[in-house]
Each structure stands twice: as C-alpha cells, then as structure tokens.
Length: 233
Image (cartoon, rainbow, N blue to C red; front, top):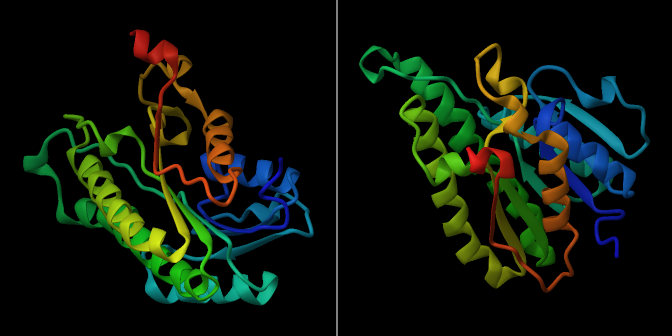
C-alpha cells in the first residue's frame, strides 16, 4: 500500500543527506514535497512539479512562519512534517568551548524543531490529522565524550518530541522519533571514522518511509536502528 501518495510533506534540510534522500523517495511515491533549507535548494537540482523549495533558517521564527505559509500557498496544507535539519560540532574540551558554538547547536536542533512543530500543529489541529517525524539519532539516547553539547541538544529534542506525542495523539496527530546510529554523510567532514560501517542516507530514508507509510491508525512512536557492522565493532 502507498499511504504517502498526494501527501504534502514539509522537510527541513532536504538539500542534502538524509533529507534529500527522503525527499527523492517521497517524490517517487507521488508525494508533494516542500523543502526548507538554509543554503542550496533541492529544486535547483531536481525538476518535479510536486517539489517546491524555500530558503530559510529553522532557528529564525520569521523564516519558519514564512516557509509554512509558502507551503500552504503552493500545496494547500501540510500533512507531514519531517524535522531533519541539524547541526553537529565536536566539543571535545568543554572548558574551551565558546558560547556561540553551544547556542548554534541548541538553536538548530531544539529551537528549530519547536518552531516547525508549532507551525505544523497550527495546520494539523483543525483537520485532526497529520504526522510529525523528527530525525534525532541515537545521540539522543547515548552520550558521546566528543560531543556533549550535540548530545544535549538531541536529548532535549527527544524530550520535546515525547511530550508532544502525549499531547498530539489525542488530536489524531502522530508523532515519531527516528533515531539512526552513525550515518555516512557530510557531517563527518574529513574526520577519520569508519564510514564503511555507518548507515547510508538512503537506508535512513527507507526507515522514514516505513514510518510514514503506515495505515492512519498505526503510530510508531520511536524507532532505533544501526548498521549491523557498526554494532559488531
């Protein structure tokens, strides 16, 4: 069954990585995709009548409000919100970490999720249906000595999402956390890590599509997954 066909999916950070892979798979299934990205836009690379892009920053309230309005103007509604935009910076020595680094990660990974959730709920509540999915990662469940602030932002996003699920389910709105382990993406830069043991962005997208492509009465609250090679060590 294809439950995403004709659904309007608002995705943050769809210009690359997990967001782009998910957007492309959704378009193949006949969904309508609205991409909000801070830098390049997916529509610059992909020509599809069911795709629109908006340049904006999820941590800026005015940008988020304007992006959701642009999505409604283009497609009439929002059925799915995929909170995918994220920022991760190594903070291996907290004693030398500047406040700006902390605030940037909290702003994108928590404030951005809150702002997008709020605007999506304004659309979903009157029709008593919708699905909010947040890509959090296993960093929201297990700490990392090299990235304590990143983990803190993800723990916070997971708490926000869990609390929202308790509220939204009573309105008919589904809320799901998607928690992949390490993913082979641009996040790692030139760091020496075993990327061959990491999940591929397309694999994460498959899991997101699995979550979205469930019958209306089925809600997956949280899904955790890793590359088996990574787990094996």
